[in-house]
Image 1: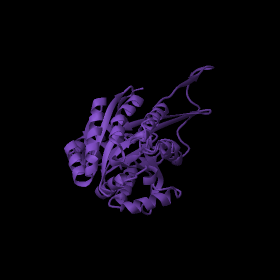
Image 2: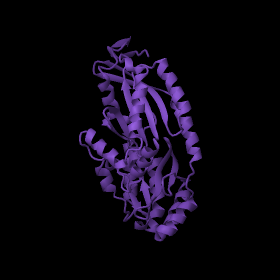
Image 3: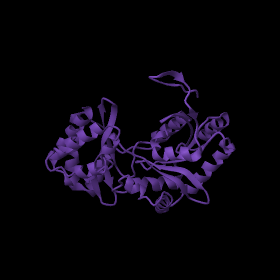
Image 4: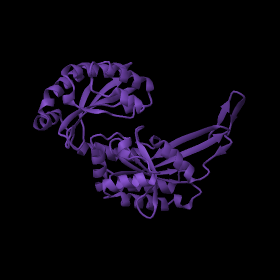
Length: 351
């Protein structure tokens, strides 16, 4: 890819440098910014040099839904970039396949410089992410990403073939990360190949996975957390009256996701979950979904804490730079608080 730059003192010119010093440089960028990988959210966390056997996967990414992405970095100068890289990433995936989730956590902590648990980083208070990871490890449900500095036809062909013959839950893409540097300015341009194939496969898989219905959620509450049922009914009514759309989630136990339009498109700031371990229906406000919009996060925080006695720990959320996604038992709220919450969230998001 050709790149030209200019500033106020000169016309268009090629940057002084192109490419990476080594593969480690590309690893460092993706480890620090995993959301550069297609399909990965801003809330995801990453582990570098994940050692699940004699060799190490360059990067393993864990997202807030429990989705796992494996990344292998290869530069064009490396002869393995054509064929061997495919074997490498499949080997790493096979070593993760059927790994115990506790072992996954131990390896992550051990190989990522003794950092805290990835589940703690993602604020997995009720174990939903851990449960999803357990399922994904057992079934081999991963996205495999080849990160390169120069696409080649051999890798493109292999990516097409693997997406054609693998199960819908497994996707394979290659991303070219073009890197240029001119003085103190660096430019990174990602170009993905195979994303459309993976998205098509994922859509087929999602269509075949049944979503929970509201009646499923309410039936679960009646059986496990009956004091929450009238509160949930109040909350659902207030959400609809404020303009939220409510759709069934696909968690292991009944869940509902609530969306609303905003100047930046449709957002999903509120969710309702059920916890099999604590037998509680829970309400969640997704502050981390707006990490790129600090003004919205603060407006959301102010709107929520303005509701008298609201049990959502807004101060703690601020202390963690809005990384927490507090999910609070519905029975800890009053009906008045749940009637007020949708309006406060909507006002903050719509601006």
